Image 1 (cartoon, rainbow, N blue to C red):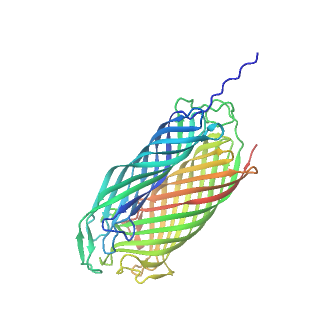
Image 2: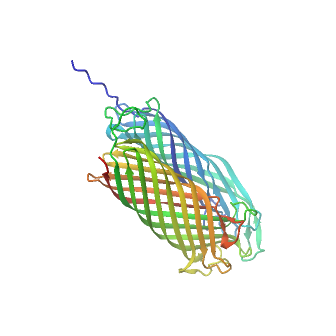
Image 3: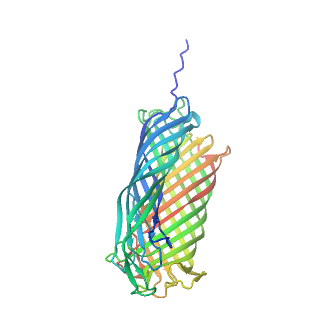
Length: 543
């Protein structure tokens, strides 16, 4: 008598899970000035690297592909953002606002729909409560009065919405890519005392102003990659009945080893960027969050790049890209506080920006999960990023007694800022088929060691013998990338994606205009983000 076939266990998302995540984010704190509309600023940007854990429960509605669940997570956050605030007048000594969140979390519900063969891919949306352990301080700038500061240190509550894609790699393990937006409403914070110049252009025409209150609303956007373990499933379990599907390295069962593959192609990246450096007083005169000057460059760029990836039969992969291009447009704001022998409380001049970019990355990694429809692993690598910015012309927007009055034409080169960043990359890369030939690639890298080297040249400064200032520092950062591509039968792949890079060096310093140390503090930060289109060709190296 023939034996009855063994029952095949159907896949379901129902069950408890726990896991970890890593990613990055960017936030903005909008300051409402009690004195009125700001000439400039009142929006404090902060980039953040984050990592943490999550746990939850999913319930797949019987006989459907609908999935409902709840999830909670907590993340350690590394961030330090600063920006000009309370700049309501060029005759008022405005302030430096800083935000430094260090911990956050959410409690959310999520609803999704399982797609693809076996329902192994979950597309979901989520929403609920969010909290943020934050530090905010407001410091009066310049060296005219003693520095005064007010601050907030505590937990802020708000709400969050988001969504993502999660792929079941095995019955026990799943990999997810997720975007979240969190808002933390209005916070009332006291503002420090300062000084108002009542006799314009006079070093003696200052009167003290009392402190008041300002309102700060804050948001944080994050992109995470995560790995979940479904509690109760065997850690090395595989899909039945095919042994050639997703495979966890270390399993006792033998899996089909895929052939080595090579993919190469090109991209066009359209991006926006922001570079900011904050010049403080000498270390023995003032804290680093009290400023005498700040330069902020905003720019757009168009670059082209070549990329490639090799996946070997022993699960080692190599990948990288190299690119460069031009800054297509931009502007630079040069802010100064209490200058020209105390005759100008606040100065802000605007210039147009040109320049170029060059960058490259190389990574070597190992695939922990690898199969015909998924490839997830970790990597270590190196990134080089150079940004050369040239500021032309000069127009004063805050105080008519300051420089750039009358305006300098845009044909005159005033300042050159040439910066190089060298970074170690530690990250996670995931590639999986969402549906048929549609593939999602996600890459998240933490930059634990970043070296910054810059050269600033104020070409029009006639009051110094050396117009060149060297800049040095170290810090950290993150780099995120996601690509959705479609594979054609002949090996051609077409896709589109997004990328976000952020690096910062809070301990940087400069020997301004060639002066010897002790050097002035110069916290610097850069970010670049945008979208790209790509085309590639993929073929087997070995059969």
